[in-house]
Length: 128
Image 1 (cartoon, rainbow, N blue to C red):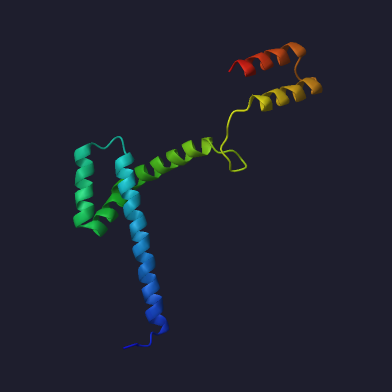
Image 2 (image 1 turned 180 degrees about the vertical axis):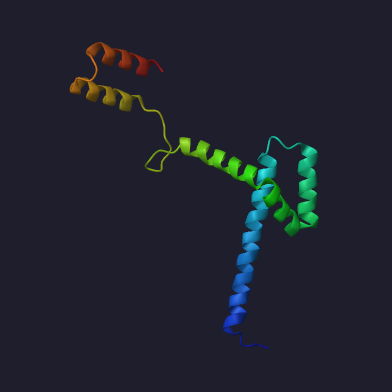
């Protein structure tokens, strides 16, 4: 039998789905952080995981309160490492010796460096 759903029924259902997905994101973030943490020993990780299985909401809340600063610091560190490899255009940054030579040629043309310095830069660049 089909029943008519009201606005608040649909809204509360969508809100419930949103809260559940947000909870899953927090849960998987905690689990990933546990496995990435090098300072925590294996037994401590196992205890956290056991509590996450049997008392998930309370354990997640305690974890965020007790270890939230370290979790945030590790995430910032991972982002900083990842950003080192991405250039301004959003692509992966790779070393290109031709770019270095082009910069040196521009400096030579402007008179900022001498011909000897340009030759040294060129030799250093292509020897890498």
